[in-house]
Image (cartoon, rainbow, N blue to C red; front, side, top):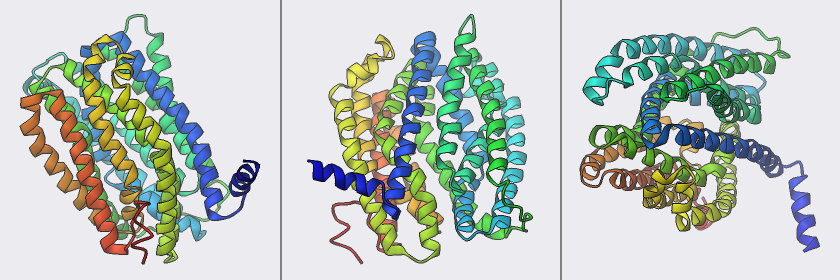
Length: 444
């Protein structure tokens, strides 16, 4: 045992690529743990104060605005991460500044226009789509948040590109839900509108902080902003833009379609089960955040074999960490659901089903981020597009028949389809297999 401890200590304290990656991931894990706790607290507080119906209305409106904010990024989030990582590794800080400025200007202009469209269409969407006029005011308030939410996410990716991974996670993943919860608890009377206003106030503050953090992170580099290759950025962003759209269809369309064919309570129960199941992928998210800029830098240097080795080792490690979480959520699913209130106990089976899809997602490894960071954005777009179309077809079949259970089955199946397709494309393009138990057999 002492030998094992010394070996682990030597590995973690080393200066090689893997010790640095694992140390960075360990720091990120601490931040992400706090972020998950903050997000869990926000969901728990909203659920306790608003009930299943109230939290269902919140998530229904939140899903619409979240989709619009993702669309509003125009695919620039992963594009800035890819190019800023590459330029920063080559010390080309003029190009780093140019890429971030171009993305900020483009995204802010587009999202302001999107907010205005949603504001004026809110009555039509509420009455004709969801048959609930009370949602009009909620949609109009949340429309204000489209621009800051999009810019926050874009700037967070820029910070990751210059090596500020943990800072980016603190600002977006942890600070935003923590502030939203604290502000919500300050209201004397709590309602769905107060929940939205709390989230908007938190988003406004985080927006200002992220912009300040970016400027401070590049302050020591005095190179003037270079002229970016706009055409190259757009060529990269377009497939990512469509990938983001299809990805949001996969994430939020089940809630939308439940809102059309079921009750707000069903939406609330489904969304809580979905968010709990995503805890299985928390370790993957942490490692992917740290892997992405490294994969981009390795690809620029042509070190494809090293990408496979790094992805295979991290996937094996992440799978081992995720396994106990998967077992706990499937065996004690009713317990975890009822933490949010007795109304949510009926979602135990939903949690079990969606946990299966999330665990498969973890074990397939960072296939999606590898495709994007290696310049094969169109392949990732194709995988997500096929999955989104599959989701829509299956939802139309299963949701009218099984309600929230049908949405859970469809979500899990589609997650399996998406990761399988992305893994196939990664193998086809680079002969990289991230699934750790077969990569040695097929090593190039």
